[in-house]
Image 1 (tube, rainbow, N blue to C red):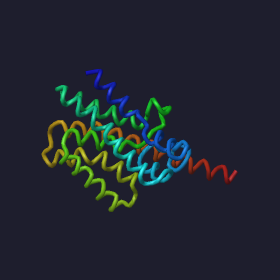
Image 2: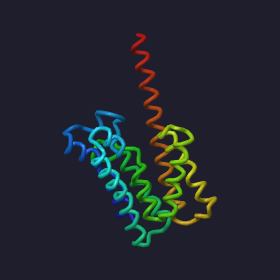
Image 3: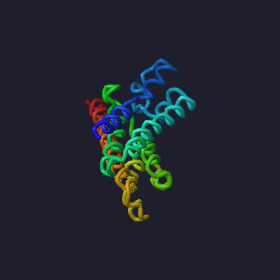
Image 4: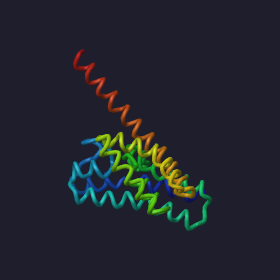
Length: 195
């Protein structure tokens, strides 16, 4: 069981955005754009093709540990721990000085491993919230919080509900921390200009 938990975290910690951007552009992705090691920032700094490669790899690193945990017959709660640790690894990767991405693609990969239909429902919720709120970070935050409730109401009561709850909590936490950081930096920047 602990092996799969470690597999989840270390798989999530693989910073494909950092490596691919460094390979293609010879830059540290964390020094530009949003500073995140993920698909969107890779597209901004290296182009669409490298960004697409990062998206696929980030989905895979979420998919594979959860798939192996399911195949090994781990209890539902333990599979959820694996999924949560994958996303924690992506957000706080040991291989990139704990400066990672936001965890959406790896969370999506974990959900696909458990239930493809449930993953599509969560994706539809995210897209709907982006269209309504018109702010991708807030939409992701609310998706992390609302998706487990939506799945429950749609009678998904098995592993997919546990995995969505585990990954949703991590994603919501990560976006909240980043949101607070951005506002704090904006406030300090204003104070410095006034001073």
